[in-house]
Image (cartoon, rainbow, N blue to C red; front, side, top):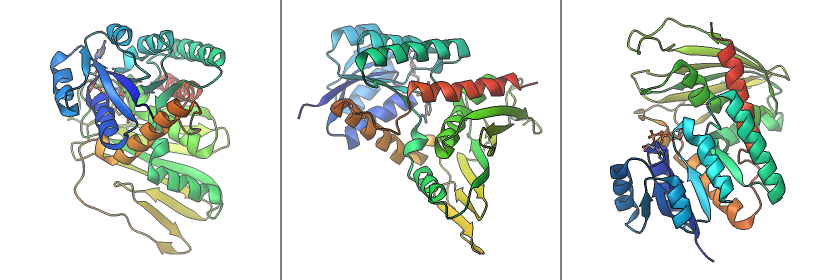
Length: 329
Ligand SMILES: NC(=O)c1ccc[n+]([C@@H]2O[C@H](COP(=O)([O-])OP(=O)(O)OC[C@H]3O[C@@H](n4cnc5c(N)ncnc54)[C@H](O)[C@@H]3O)[C@@H](O)[C@H]2O)c1
């Protein structure tokens, strides 16, 4: 079997993470070329990957010069639209990090272009990095909810708190961070977003002036489930991601280490504790690897894995972000 030759645009935290996960876990694929405006970052990744990788300061040059089979886009949010257009022009199956775009007009335009491109191709070719769909704890929670044992889901409490978020804007709290919530709850509950409101706790004196931090949102799905989420850009204590689904006959929770905890039939399980990690990479390592495996297999077989986020999914999550942004006063 021939090895899938992958190019990566952007070699920061996520580009490096994807490249290392492919090296360590996906023998049927290889990162053969990388592109970044920062040569030293690329040099360090080349060394890490074992040397046999071409580097390019221009993604266009990379795509022109190397016979790639597929592309990963892990550039900053504002470059995804341009890089998606490059991918389609070169007919490269692509996994693009979230979000699809940083404004609604661009999101709608590129989603429409992807729809036309894929319809001509006759198959899905462009997917998006909403990896919570591949996380074992979210998968377990979904299967518990779908089993009906706990009755219907009524409301969700969800928490996303970063240790620090350098350079984040208030808009980015939605388009860069909460976009994961707007994807995962839509996927978990198989429903569409109806409305989003913003709420404002006491601002942290340790966060940059002008940033709304923390930010709380309440979002309703068409079927009536309410999702209340908090986003803390700079919590100064450890990466903290948790969630609880309150159902008619029980409470189902994902703890900080991805442990699934139930409260039902008058029995309460308890969350595990321990040292906290600094960011999302260790927490979601299994999810990133599973997502990459599903994507590589989809590219290789031509049959897209049904849980990989499509352009329509990515657009729906970004549409919800802009419902949220409209609510900011
Ligand atoms: N799915 C997830 O869990 C997850 C988590 C974090 C970030 N992300 C997304 O991944 C993307 C990258 O995030 P990150 O945390 O790795 O950011 P980062 O800042 O660490 O890395 C971005 C890289 O892109 C490079 N770059 C800038 N301009 C470029 C250009 N024109 N061409 C090529 N490379 C260029 C930068 O030099 C940098 O190395 C973002 O869109 C972000 O929203 C997703």
